[in-house]
Length: 140
Image 1 (cartoon, rainbow, N blue to C red):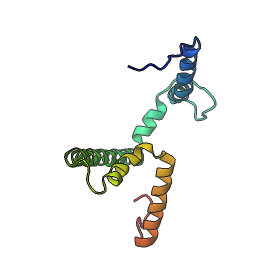
Image 2: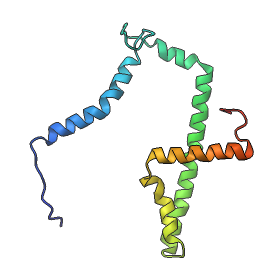
Image 3: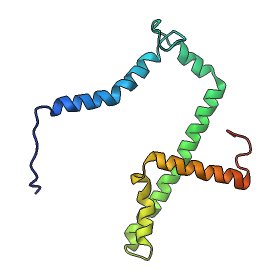
Image 4: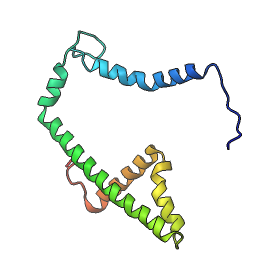
């Protein structure tokens, strides 16, 4: 049983509402302004789905979305397979030489900030580009 004291502040509901408002209000504003019929973001000209029609008619954008979804599906499939194998290894073999390093490699993406991960991947891809000339054409 946990004997830690529970703080019942009368402000907790207000703090919760303010926190959720801070997180979700910008997304709500983006959704609302996505239906603006004006070319200018700052000028409201009425409700319209014009820009969604333009988006779906743009073949380059739809091609990019298709490629992104394909890459995401492949990455998710590989993550499930590798995660399952890693879980089986950790449960079946228990303690083995290098178990701490193995556990660190598995949990590192969970505790490492996304900015550091992105920066390290950027440096890796730049180094790969210099070493093997990949990618030869940007974006392909």
